[in-house]
Image: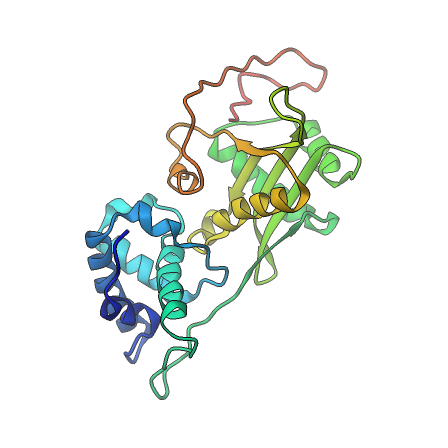
Length: 267
């Protein structure tokens, strides 16, 4: 990616207008030029900004209204935030100026943490949304068992959540296993879901990055996952690692849990 002219990013770093709407409009104009000048896939590699603001959400909304084809890109607001923060940090350690009387952009961090017993209601809500996304169903007994095993420290499962403003807005469910090709522990990310009402804040990216950070800290050998070939979230996944060339085969067998393979259409 080539150098970005500072004047373009000035509007992203410090909106010098009287209202959020005007600020978003100006920033959107600059962001449009930025996207035209540089490939969008490169922009996503600048890093992760853990405190996206309402301001950048407005930027993304204005951008999508002008270029509807970008509506499927997850975390677009975060992309603009990344550009702004990265540029600001590289140019100066002094916070960007704000016009007198202007409202400061509202920021609220997303926290990634272990799943807890108190999260049951939120986890079940997000789990149901995840199943709906894949047009799948599982018996209640399977859901109950999965929830219980995620909380059991003796089970090879890990549940993590993304929390924003006191609300759990995203989850990951992972399974640990061994590999004949590796000596270390392998983490299979089986489920990742972010509440559609809270997308664009960067929760999906943070949940993925969280697993990579844990892998480094705990010495895991690999993190891997599957997804539908037409899942729009692949645009996010591709910024971490390209998809491999292998084809996935799976055959469900009869069991005593009542699961129907025809309705268990998960990745």
